[in-house]
Length: 335
Image (cartoon, rainbow, N blue to C red):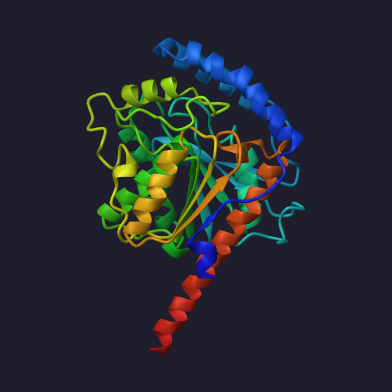
């Protein structure tokens, strides 16, 4: 049980032809286009508009998945329920539990709609609804406003009667950054902590440290543009503040973490640093490093077999966290 919560996992598998093709396509299109275009506020706004239009296309989720719009103060979101789908072992979800999901997109693109390939599968394997938050993003809004939205949504879940031990936080890339910042902020503000958190390819270091790992190997992210975005979003801030760069955080007292990354990601090194730092602070960490996968490869589950395989890993982690919590409460009751 403990091994499923606190261990390093490096899955072995023959790389699928789909993954090889996806890596080549991303390396030849998205990476060079991003390197050229992402240099001005206008380009950020244009990219946002294009992704938003693409996210409106039909066919992102199966008919068995239900989507319900939601609003929280300054932002909105959607409830995603994956029960009834073949990937779910459950006839229905546990409505007393929830995953609060914070999507990625470098703090300027994407939304809950674009990340439905992740959220409906996460609902299916965890047996609970997912609340995907459409938090405020740049260039109009600041990091602090994104964090404020995440805090408001978490408080709203508590106010609606969700017990903290029934809440899982999750997020990818910039949403992984926001997930880690939210955890630190919850603890520092004395709020009850969730049962666990899952972060996929987290963007955890927005400091001025140069990103040396996988600058050329990453098939999707141009390191120079990631560094440029870091400088842009942290202008006027202390870029080593843990809420700005969670890689410098103190993780003492936080719940178990699951961190998923890839051997070829430009963000791999900072994901591993978060795992090491959290463990040093006494936190159980399941660190998974998948071979030659693109950034946030879980979002490509419709086409990559490796991406589909990562979701049962998340389900196993959540089950192990719940089993450990039950065992601990039983020991406490017996004492």
